[in-house]
Length: 403
Image (cartoon, rainbow, N blue to C red; front, side, top):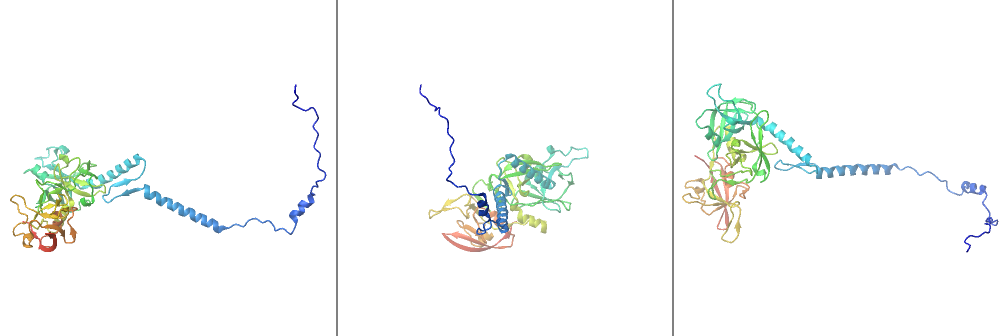
């Protein structure tokens, strides 16, 4: 059997006597030797710490600004809140809070129209008996509603009730010569009002609300704007003396909303609901509202043309180019493009002319020619830039009062 292990005893290794060990005294002398530099503790440099602290502060501010830029709530031009966050529940809470704020601010100006009861024992003022809505326009008692609401009332006497149950009787009624809007005066002062907004700053698809007066909070109908220039024309011919382009909603307008205001997410009234299809932009009533404040009479300007809005209905010109800007003067059946004896006729405007600019404002579809003309008062002088035979010229017209 082979042996794997030795049986010899293991010898201890002898120390190498030739190697000398350094005496302990020499080690001590090595560190005590004056020829070596003294080992010192590194000095503190407080300037470096100041730089580090400053950089940390700057980085903190930078991170905060980046967070605000990417994640905080932003508001666009139409007032629509956009919340760039990941949690859906935060978006819902923000929308609900905003709606509550809108209702609180707008409800005091919304009114309901009721047929006046024959006696004190008549019907209660319930929502089912309301003939329509409206809203307070001025603090001295002018109220706006739709012509449709007045038609519903007919010859019956009626009263106007606010959300907090204040009752008013009409003392004067004015109609707009070129729109289906009615202005009603009541005996009151210091009434609440709400800021008016611009439909031109709104977008198709934007969320808005139709509000009906109720206590303690209004009834809100959630709506989405559809066509901002929805036409009521049977054809494409419009008149400068009649509004024919209005605002439609994707959901349509319920019968109970007729006369009610449309409010954007900024809490501004941007339109009044005329009927179950269309709403009237408040911008169309700019000069009418100004007249109410000055003379309690509505005067509208007259230019005297009919036209096709090329921004909505573009056409191919004789040169093969598409014309999608301007107002093309055009008649229809027995309706002439330029009314005889009108300011446009006196200025020499002709059928086929394209009005491309009013004063310094382009006719590019953002506003209809009707809206642009009706922003001026009778008697004002205007410069119109027209295109005729591929050449442009400027003509001056003096607006007349519409009779």
